[in-house]
Image (cartoon, rainbow, N blue to C red; front, side, top):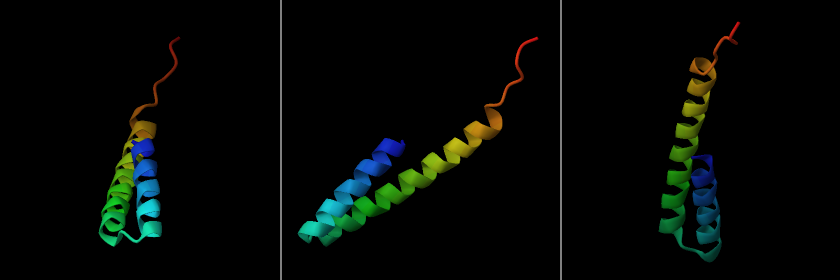
Amino acid sequence: MLRWAIICLVIALIAAFFGFGGVATAATDIAKVLFFVFLVLFVLALIFGRRKPPK
């Protein structure tokens, strides 16, 4: 998921550099959403992924 956010961010930067404003805005928004989804899933995995070691 983080990989997709980084890919969308790179696409947004390239599109902004070449002057494609609409594409850059859309790719930036997608990158933001994917980053926050990744962040929430990461925090949930930290909270619920803890298990006690076997005895």
